[in-house]
Image (cartoon, rainbow, N blue to C red):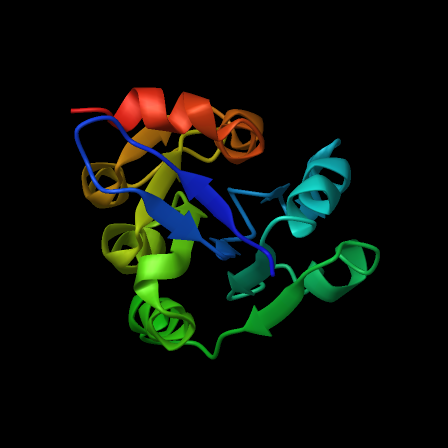
Length: 158
């Protein structure tokens, strides 16, 4: 069973089994995975089920993630925020950590057990940052919070 348990001082323990990620602006820039992402996701795929949920703006998500241990969901145009939220709700929001940057990520980030907003070259929507439990300056720091969950517990402690 894949799970990361996070003890948060002064709060309830969280058991995560799904990592749900946006693609462009989060894992990729202009449709191409950022260097080092494959390795980080491979490490996390041993602990969590990894899901990439995307509009696939550049049409490259399947090609660029072919050797990444993750499931891919490509969304239809329109109501993408609601579609991402529905995907997370199907998995069980209480067991999901969601990472994104765009306006269409705000609902899944807000509803997840742990929501993380990343602010990189593409920027981040203000609504998504406000909906997040944690805001970081790059995807590597976000993923490392899950590789070393004591960091996340320290950030979220009461």
